[in-house]
Image 1 (spheres, rainbow over the protein chains, first blue to last red):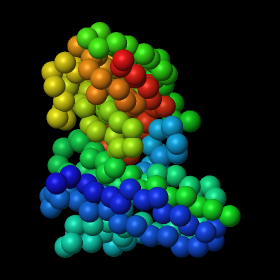
Image 2: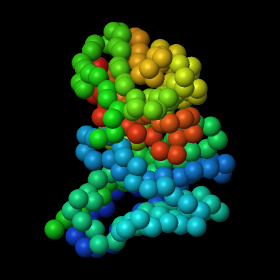
Image 3: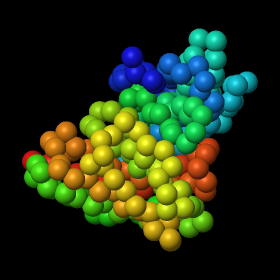
Length: 109
Length: 113
């Protein structure tokens, strides 16, 4: 079983719609959680950290469920520019970031 | 732009050869982490360097090795290249070893024929 698992998608989303997807992690000792965004043939960039109480950054909302060991990302009012691969990232003790395989989102007019 | 630079941008090698990839960290960052990203997959942690010492390693064989220099720039060396080493190699710098955020460079795309 992979340490961090994501639905690879693609999620085809009409512009203006809401899309949500999850990521599950296997290490119950995981301490920190992030969503990174990666555009085609570009480097990953931090989208947002995920806090225990959940957090929002504009149109993006992240949630953490420690009991079920998953995190989620919701994108409201999708823009064409939101088309990208979203990488779920988990950090256990130490300095290693573990990435999921990514969820591809395609926003269409 | 993050200020993290990598060279070269693209590289083609043949099986059995050796390769050296380079990374310059963002100003003020003393930690560099290296990742391998195969096509269609997420980045996989290779190792991290902090103040010129290896500070954590992922599940990669010893033919993957690295260095960090006093200016915090870093090199990734891969010996005895295999076809499966074809990937995007990313370095990320951070201000310390506990990465609340890592800033990635644009990557080096390595093709092994």
